[in-house]
Length: 411
Ligand SMILES: Cc1cc2nc3c(=O)[nH]c(=O)nc-3n(C[C@H](O)[C@H](O)[C@H](O)COP(=O)(O)OP(=O)(O)OC[C@H]3O[C@@H](n4cnc5c(N)ncnc54)[C@H](O)[C@@H]3O)c2cc1C
Image 1 (spheres, helix red, strand yellow):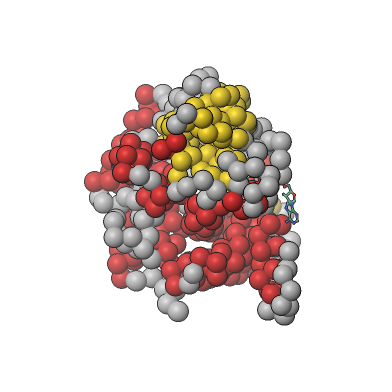
Image 2 (tube, helix red, strand yellow):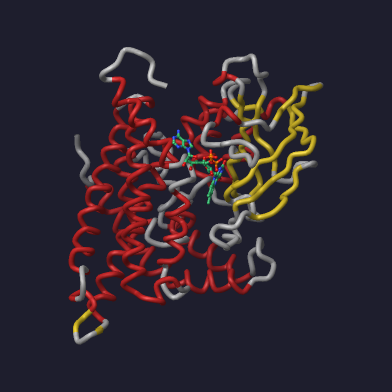
């Protein structure tokens, strides 16, 4: 099991790190200050577009683009283990993943379109997504049902004269606030309650400007609207789509969701480790440079232990992440999924703890706009819910453990 950096990847890591440190981070504060000042929340000012598009063109010109196409003949053909090292670097700043066209939810959506889209879907949606011209959203979660159990999804798609008619609500559709977001992948209920539980749902493509589709409101994350990306609450009122925009086949929504969510989940974890590294660096630098009670902060209280524990936990999380990535490269989806669940619990939890301690070391400034820590904390806290709450992933891990000792079906 080789979890180390290959030669190919170490060059790419240096290139990505260079762009992150020397180009993206210097512009990021200005980008988010523009967002904060904007009254039209879900739009891009001229300057925001200029910053983002300049950085994207630089990445594209250097060929640092679409790394996420792992185990594919397209792109770099990286393994998931190799991608982990790059995603960690991209996770060190907020615009990183988008600048390299490796951001959620687009990568997962592109994977779905690549795997299950028709030639027409690929032309219409995949190509502009791959070139970074448009963005997309993934709509599974619904307000009225416990969405950690996806068999509960209730937005209906009824077949009628060559179309599906969609009715219901979705919320927490990340990225649906972005004016560049042109297409949603939506989980819908096509089967009735008598059909098999895991064959009742399907995935369809819905253009964001479809008639009958309304953005009700942006959901707030600890009081922030996360503009211009946004996590939108959507209403589907008799939204009509052609039957050709059903992916894979009726009742095969779960198959698609499993394939989609695995890579998306681990990519979040890889970036979370990058965020933890940034936080630990800030914690150390701050602790060494500030004095209270006649000592530098690192020498006060339990701060040595906090720094040591942070380093130890990051290393453990990274190794687990790399092992899960290796499982994805070498084992079947079912085996790998338990490993993805393990890291999906560990990475956000470890990173959140490190970021929280870094905030503490910073004092008041730690929760302000002056450091990246507050935004990182919010993001990592939500990651303990998004793409499956911790409890659901722990359940997966426990079931696979118990199966070793029981022939009975573990529910
Ligand atoms: C910032 C953010 C972005 C998101 N982006 C998207 C997106 O782009 N697209 C999308 O479709 N969704 C998105 N989500 C939604 C997210 O995936 C759901 O919130 C999540 O799946 C949980 O569903 P729920 O909110 O309905 O919670 P529920 O299903 O009601 O669960 C609530 C709680 O019940 C407990 N619980 C549930 N199951 C178990 C179990 N098996 N064992 C023990 N306890 C359990 C857990 O504590 C869980 O947190 C996002 C959420 C957030 C916060």
